[in-house]
Amino acid sequence: MINRFDRRGAALLWTADSGAAILMAAALAAGVAAAARHDHGALRLAVGAMVAAAALRAALQIGATDAGEIAAADAKTSWRKRVYPRVLVAPPGDRRMLGEAVADAVDRIEDLGGFHARFLPLRRAAILSPLVIAIAAVFASWIAAAIMLATLVPFGLGMALAGTAAARAAARQLDALSRLSGLFVDRVRALPVIVGFGAQERIGRHLADATREVAARTIDVLKVAFVSSAVIEFFAALSVAMVALYCGFNLLGILPFPAPERLTLGEALFVLILAPEFYLPMRRLAAAYHDKQVGEAAVERLEGIAPPAPAPSDRAIEAPPALRFDAVVVDYGETAIGPFTLDVASGSIFALRGPTGIGKSSLLHALLGLAPIGGGRILVDGRDAGDVALAGHVGWAGQSVAFIPGTLADNIRLARPEADDAAVEAAARDAGLGPMIEARGEGMALRLDHRGSGLSGGERRRVGIARVLLKDAPLWLLDEPTADLDARSAADIAAILASAASGRTVLMATHSAELAAIATSEMVLA
Image (tube, rainbow, N blue to C red; front, side, top):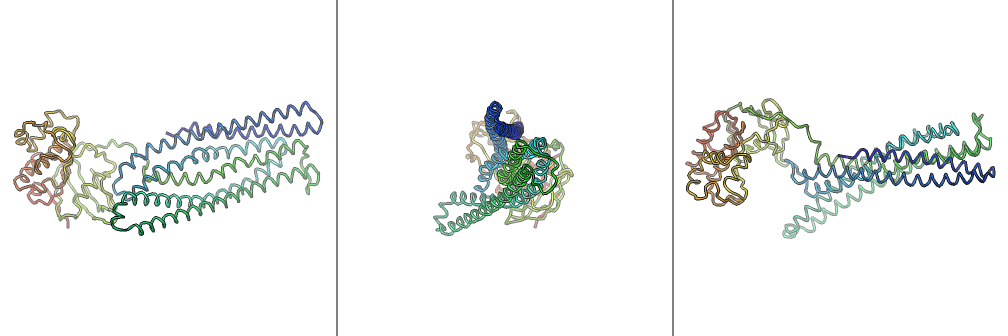
């Protein structure tokens, strides 16, 4: 979590710096007045006060800088904890290049440093500090204070106009930088293939084009930065000049209008010294304005990687749910499948049939959030599937059964890690693995590698079915559970599923007419 105390502390220290500036201006004005009176004692006191005020300002500015850096470090740490897990596991449908994602996770987080260390504390100080200085100036010349406050309007307008242009330029620059990083990293990964196909020249042109785009975007940012700095410095100089003209003409008594006040040398010098200090917080803010644009553009990209976490959902499915696919389109970018509309009644077995590539598996993946949905919606008991806690409440058997190095029992227990040995063996036997367990001396302690070596195709399918049985979930999703099996093994698994699926909602994708025969309803996709 970002340390807001450090950020606010930095803002207060920057504001306190303006208070020290008032003390320094008062000491300098008092010293000049004492010198004019030849009062050496008062002059020494004024010089001592100036030295103390200067030391105080130095300490306050160092403290403000350190507090801002601490807040920036906390902010970057918080973003790293949030972003890095999302980069390591790409979300469904993410078509960004790996290098682009890594560049965003590393470089964009670093871009937040100036935003949190400088801009955010200075923004607060830029509001409070001018008011503090204007109040101090009122005691010497209320007209000079009014001039200072009046010139804030064009000054703020200039910053707003410059900031709008800078925001667009900074966002375009970060986009170009991320694309270049992604292109470079991905081409380095594919270097053997590029060399093998003799595509070095073409890839070199791609990188050169991306580099020129980054250079052009950077020049655009610099142009806006220079123009905005010129505008701000112009208004600051003009405002200081107006205060100086008023104080000088007032002292000389040659104002072109009746003066409502008469300034002494000390008062005029005090106000004149405060005039640059009045605009200093805003000039500091203007200098950090580029940090704001880069930081906000970086946050936008980072939130694209790791959007704010939704509130935890307690809407878990505890009973067999009803499913509805309402004009669902699965969009893989270059290929879109659908739309599909179908209803699966609660507690029913529904079979999806159709040729390979029609989208049967994609619909199952979309329900689990593993495939990108480009249109339509999926409802679970009338609620959006994204609002329902499906994790831990679905029994899954896919086309390919994954294994881990371990025993047969360990691989089946993946479905329910807390299950005891008796429950695991019962699920294995219910899935038809009993003859294999008895035929091998190791039984459930049979060692398997990550490929499931030593098991036949049918036995691997039965391990997947055993996991579904052990899970005992209210919703089963089965993706070709009898594919590539001989007729007898397929018939055995169909019988097992028909017996065990009672009281559950089952959605299965299959080519097999024999397996579809156990379904209470089916749809043929074409």
